[in-house]
Structure formats: structure tokens, C-alpha cells
Length: 271
Ligand code: HPA
Image 1 (tube, rainbow, N blue to C red):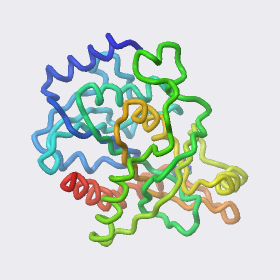
Image 2 (cartoon, protein in one colour; image 1 turned 180 degrees about the horizontal axis):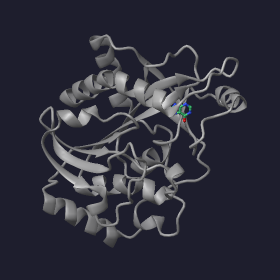
Image 3 (cartoon, rainbow, N blue to C red; image 1 turned 90 degrees about the vertical axis):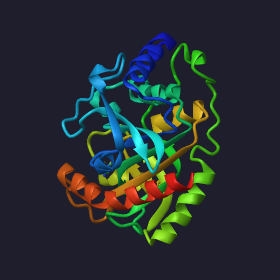
Image 4 (tube, rainbow, N blue to C red; image 1 turned 45 degrees about the vertical axis):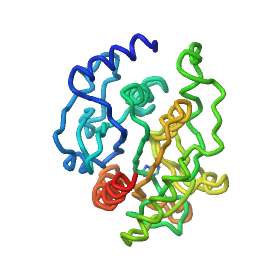
């Protein structure tokens, strides 16, 4: 990755009309209905944007969409990149750097995750308060990282406290159950064993998924305030573990998505 490449991605999008977005949004697996609320959308397919990685997972359509949400200029990633697809940490986080170069000053992230905390139920939303990076690497571990920001990035408060507070009160007003917890990020794509779920619980995770953490690390390097929500798609009880199919995960996440959309839209109104 070079700044010249980033500039080419930026130039392509600026020429398409991606002018001064204020907010970036990353949509997770099965979470795509938000796209329908974007007004005056302009679409850039990932495979047309210079130096963008290519989307591979068939249920991700792979587009960057610019437009208005609650009268704010937004840029939305429909489909994200995962390490389990064979992408490097640099690939996975490249779009975050591009959205930052376009001018976003806040980032919202969503994902589908398994509930490790068994007080939480399938279909609940969880506000990510903190995380555990279990992906075995960092998106900041490369030679010329200093060309893009500091190397030793502080992670004492990776998720913006102000937005966390705001979305918590919005959830109360809207009578939407919003859990709070720690998200552990693994590579996947296999789901976890009973022994792994037991371990994740012991080390303090409330949810587990295969994304988000690399993007959040890069956002922190860029001093970009982040808010992230997990849709809990299955209950990971090591003492009573049932097989989970990806189609169940997709179904639960799309059923729970309207609640997440409400929270996102209300938060945007209040920013
Ligand atoms: N692990 C377990 N359950 C899940 C995951 C995961 O990574 N993602 C969504 N549900």
C-alpha cells in the first residue's frame, strides 16, 4: 500500500461525485437493508475502484454507496473484506483508509456475531464496548506504516465513549434492547468448538465474530471515532451446543437489522 494508490482510489471516487462524506458505515453479513434508505445514491463497484480488493463471498455484493441518510452525507460499504477470504490485513482495512481520505469524521460498523454471554439472546443487538484481537496479526504491522500514521496506536478507548452514551439513550427511548459487551475477533471461517467457546467466555468475551477489529484498529490509528454494533445471531453455549448453519446466521441478522437501522438513523439525527 502506498499513499499514491490511496490517492488514485480517492480521485476515482471524487470524480464519481463522492463529495465530502461526513460518516462512513460498514455493513456486516446479512445486513444490507440500510442501503434502501440512502437518498440520491451513487454507486461504485469495488472492482472498479483502483486498488480496492475484490469481494468474493457470494452474499456480498461489493459496493461503495454514497448518498444522504437523515440529511447527512454518508458513504456505505455494502459488503466488507474478511481475512478468511484470503485477504491480508492491509486489504481488509484499505477501504477504511479510502473513506477517511474522502473526509469522513465518524465510522459506524456492524457485524453478525455469536453470543458467548448466555444472558444475551439470539436476535439481540450488542454495542461493542471493547474488543479482543484474536486474529493473530495487526493491520498496523507493515514496514511503511509510518507513512500512514503512528505505529504504536493507543487502544485504551477504541470505541467512542460519546457515541456509546448517545446510542444507549436512543435505544432506551426507542425501547430496543441493546446489550453491551466485549467482542472477540477470530479469523474463521469455521465456527468455534465447544472448547473454544469455553475459552472465549473465560477470557472475557461476550460475543465472537470474524471481522471489525482490524477496521477499528486502523480507525484508531486515523483518530476516527468508531461506533460498532453486533447482531447476535446464535447462542454459543458450550454445554448445549447445536450445529449452526450460515443460512440461520443470515436469517437472524436480516430479521434483527430493522432495529439496528433505527438506532443508526436516530444516532445520525443526533450527531
Ligand atoms: N462464531 C460463532 N457464531 C457466529 C459467528 C462466529 O464467528 N458469527 C456469527 N455467529
